[in-house]
Image 1: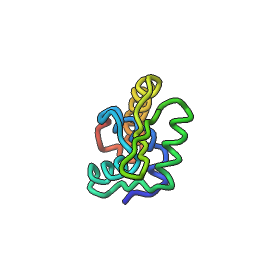
Image 2 (image 1 turned 180 degrees about the horizontal axis):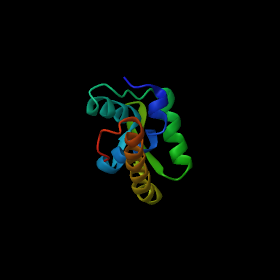
Image 3 (image 1 turned 90 degrees about the vertical axis):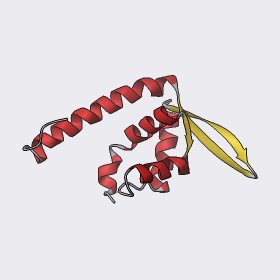
Length: 112
C-alpha cells in the first residue's frame, strides 16, 4: 500500500478518471474499484475519499444524486460539465508530472 502523502496529489485525478469511465459511482464503490484495479496497492480510506468528494462537489467538478437502497440513502457521484473539462487538464498535468518525476528519480527510464 502506498503512503497517503503519495496519494494526496493524485486523488482528484483518480476520482475524475473513474467517474468519466463509469458515469456514476458511490463512495464505497470508488474505493473498492481502486483497490481492485491496483491489486490492493492503493486503498482509499474514508477519511480522505469523502472529504475529496465533498470538496470536488463544492468546486463544481462533481454532483450527486441520492437513491434509496432499502432504508439507506446512497449518493451516486457523477461529473458535471466543468468536471468533464477539468478531467482532461488534471490527467494531462499528472502525465506531465510523472514524466518529469521520472527524469529526476529514474533518469535511466524513458519518459511517458
